[in-house]
Length: 359
Image (cartoon, rainbow, N blue to C red; front, side):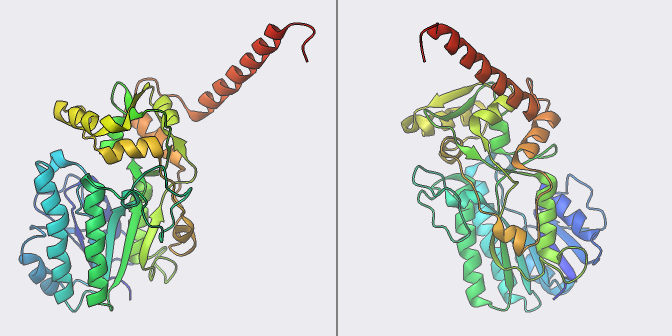
């Protein structure tokens, strides 16, 4: 069923506002209503704005009065500071989602739910598989922060699918989203004077450019080019990530930052210290990601959702570095050329050191 009236939550933040504006401009021309407790920071274009809390009973009335058939849930906050602290953040993320889903359950007109989630629900640890598919079970599930909230949110969403099997539900599990207009805990880590990571580890990371993240949400909500193509009926979890990987040390080099190893036993202490000083909101989960990494299998995204990010993981991170003016930024081609030159120089020196008579 084509989306006719779409409710987008969390439009006061950058990505939520961009998704609402993009949906309003889509060729299928759905009527879009943006919802949040404060006005949006970006122009919503043709989308209307309603000031309300998703924890309020008013949301249920809004779904009925506006004839909403599709709900796009973007109101899961990743930064405690913007929510007023960890406790309010968890209340908005978890309790707010529960109230929203309860309203959706009672609204007979709702037929589709699209939720922005995170690949952080897979956790990060030494026993992880080489690539996570949507069916993978986390060997080291997240225990704190935003990723833990998203894990709980996904549990409540699965409960809605059991109670309302007529509602088509899509969960987009994004790799780390970066870009010019977005600030996340992980992006702030790479803006620090030195990048903390687990001692002795160099995790493989994936990134999604903010423009690709918006396009993926739109594709999952209303499909591709306005026709009945891919994206209209995809349900369940879908991994979204740019092609390729960037290791933590490579990302730090692109940002012009040194890497500082932290023993895993002190990861929690280091994260709390960085958070208290205001340098960055860092959790144990963030440091474990930087140390152990996480790579997603995006086959379902390409083949069923019909979406391929325009930027690779490296290109997305490079644009983040460029737009944030990170000192020491250099294009990847320069780094590769330097690595080749260094390897050649070391080989020549080693050969000269052996002298005549050596094999």
